[in-house]
Length: 290
Image 1 (cartoon, rainbow, N blue to C red):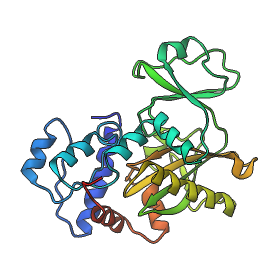
Image 2 (cartoon, one colour):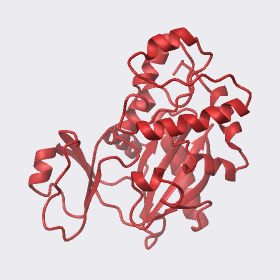
Image 3 (cartoon, rainbow, N blue to C red):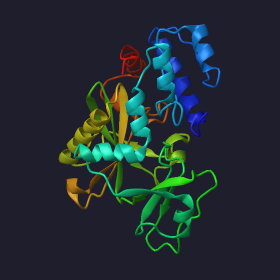
């Protein structure tokens, strides 16, 4: 039911194929208001959560599955809710000593009326993923942004971080290799999920060893700081003119994309873990006790 419905369907299709290859009996469910009844009918041993965005990634469906005592993949209620709330996640990261930038929550109307922080800055929904509803206000902008109607009444405004796009997935408390994302513009929803060519992935990233190690270290520490389980992916900006000091953690995704153009499966493959094995390991890690 989220703004990321289409990518959720794409992830689910790929994961269902991989799970059948791995030897599981798979029933695909299009999650909606009848989800409790469908789960009672199917009586699954495990739910593989392939949902992205609100309801499926923010602790809501996790709470339902906890109530029904059905083991499920990926993070639990608290970690999912924290990761989806960018402000609270950032507070946890800062407390863990991870590098983040300044941000604030403001009324949408105020953000459209004046610059609420020095330019350049970014305006985004506080609880959406996949670069949904993200607006960059560049240096030299004539005025504040004109935000679309679908933006919530209160939004997050964050200092813009220049530099290169880096990302790293974590599974079973192990950080995979680092990927650099190359696009003509910036890594928005289209670049993430469009047909191949929306973004070029360099995996492993051609970056200095100390920076790659820092990205892996920060990704694992962010995963642990929120109490994540199973698979997560951390996103970074790196100003390569400043060395490690130019590395900033943007956010963590507790339900990384699992599509043909997604990053986590690609990073797992670089570590020798094929897609069916990746999905099988997530099923084996499923729980309803966290």
